[in-house]
Image 1 (cartoon, rainbow, N blue to C red):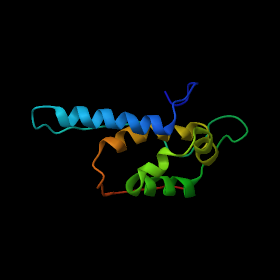
Image 2 (tube, rainbow, N blue to C red):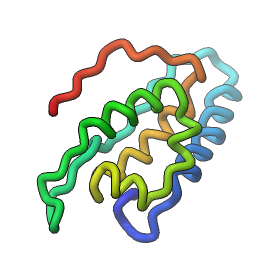
Image 3 (cartoon, rainbow, N blue to C red):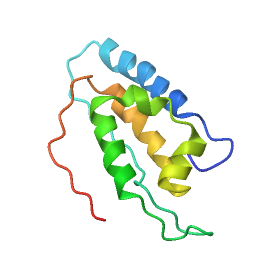
Image 4 (cartoon, rainbow, N blue to C red):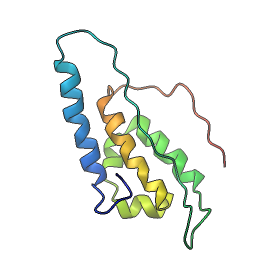
Length: 114
C-alpha cells in the first residue's frame, strides 16, 4: 500500500486513524482492542542506495512517533524516502496505528540496531 504508486500521503494515513478511533469508541461494548501495523524503519534493498540505513532518522522517527505524531503527518513521501530509503517510507502506515491510540502513549521498550 505504501510502495505502490500513487502513494497516499502521510497525512491521509494519519487521518484514517480518526475514523478508526471513532469506530472503536462508538462500539457499545467495552472491549480491548489491539491495533497492529507493518513496515520497517529505514532501509533500501535495491538500486543505487541498496543497503542504506539511517539509524539517526530511525531514532528521530520513533521519538516523534511517541511524542509528536502530528509532525510526522506533515512529512512528504519524498522526504520519507530521502530520510529512510524507498522501502523505509512504509513507516507512514504506522501513523494509522499511532493515530488510533491515545495521545498519551509511553514507550515501554525500544531497541535500535545500527
